[in-house]
Length: 448
Image (cartoon, rainbow, N blue to C red):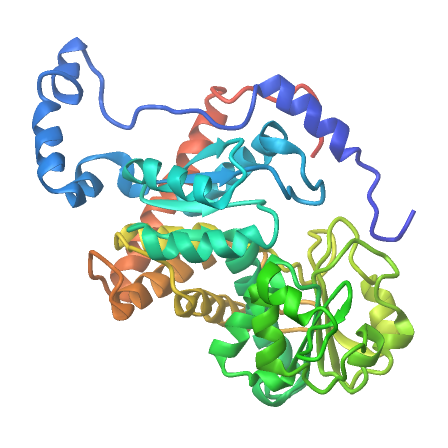
């Protein structure tokens, strides 16, 4: 057993508690019901007037119904966590867990929705069909490259924000960590050599954010399982059809400082930073490769449940800053720092989309929060329990949506900060009250 492995049987414990509670979420009223007369307001006959108003002006549905604070967490179960293509039923516990995080950390009501549709047009038709019920959509655990086309088309064709957390959430969290890591080592990210190992959802989105951030494409190398994405790669013509996102990266970067056919070992020679989002390790990244990186190297090994290289191995090889995707290791790159707050912000201003600039704004605010706390080599990014982060990120994203011209409502940073703090605090206090009153039953086993 490695130094990072724990003794708790989290798998067995999770099954036992899921079975005990019958899932994680439920729906409860938020309006007073003192007698049957109240239903004359909340239902018939009174509800007819809110219905008529919403029919005349669909935007009124954001003011008169729970739509303003409700999103769908949607998956087809084709790429779930580290489990792969396990189908919609297998994906449901994960979507429900996501809904729990949305509510507790962002005060957002999220509905798990899994389905059996596999083709892109069917997916898009589904999103358009359910759009009137929601204020936003969080796409989750969808196979590549379909996930890229789906996000692009949905952002163009829907009038509510659509977000793919495996792309934008992970990329924004990674960017936040990189901003602070480069500050600590005293290097300028925009003039550094950055290697992205793994060309799936997270790193393709990160590449896009790095470009918007100002990193020249020629300073970035992106590698998939076959090697560097390079204009002269043997399968470049096939990529143009099968994966135009990889094809575009190959053309824009020119393969960076590598030649066609080079692999990860060659890429790390003289590199300043590595972001690996590939496959579980250990041993996917070798110590001797890290040793060839520049001084004060930055290594993000984000595969779960086991990173591509253990942090202590990367440190022994000369890396100064190391981050992973695990909660039991320092510097967890966690998209849960991003998505609850992003949706809190966009819902509060009734945004129509989430731009890359808004995702970057979230990353900058996350980095700033950690910096104000005091950066260290083992603290470059906040932890989930630092809940004061979430209203700040919500406020930053909401204001950016207004300046980008994609919000139905205007706000200021201070106004949204207070609004988000109130909503998130109320959500947490409701949970705590239910727990204190025994309305959430005590678990049958003590695991604290």
